[in-house]
Length: 288
Image 1 (cartoon, rainbow, N blue to C red):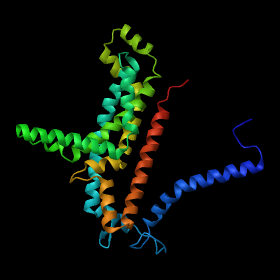
Image 2: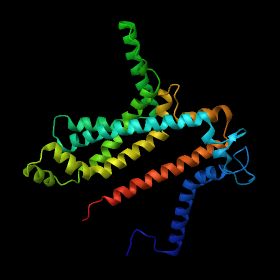
Image 3: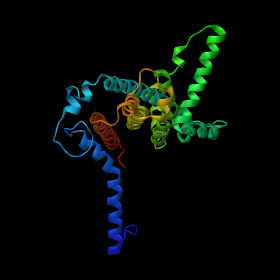
Image 4: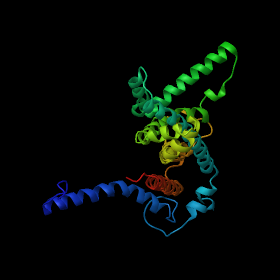
């Protein structure tokens, strides 16, 4: 008998009502955004005036679709570039961190592990401001002392990548370390005893086992990077990613159906990537 499930009819109704209310709370805002993305009205509100795809593919105002909106497309490509760059960097460094904390013993290991976790609990605004102040201080010092102009330390894409990397590498490290912890090192020892070099063992035995975690860590880092706002807002320059572009549009123009269309596009894309990550993890899970 499942002792966790409610037994009486009243408790079952309460439990069912709670679950329904919970999922409605999660889904209702997303459903509303999706519905108004297809409403043939220049305002994202009722009444319903008919179905349209103009907010996605419209070529002229006032119904200029997202795929023909230059600023939104520039923001999308900036987000893709930043997301791919910071995710790749985070996976590489996260893999190194996983091996360091799972395979090595050294003085101060516990302290370093705590320091690695800290960026996850620091508010994104504080993290962004701290990185901006630190980078600006270095840039100003070099300019005053040596006349060097290191513009990459000014607000812009480099600082956005650096700021997001500061906490995304923690996420990738934890995901990869969890997989590495389950690995049977006897497989590596057997390969070494058969004459394989450590590099070959890493390439042919260890990394293939870690591949699902590497892919999942990359997907998670990419999704978090794509939707990040607080840290990015403090570090962004002229090449604004999509979240900042949408925020700027909302402040200057207000809510419009094209922003709902962008939201639908992002929801579908995020859902596909998350589902793909789950399928990869299940497909590569070792059989017990």
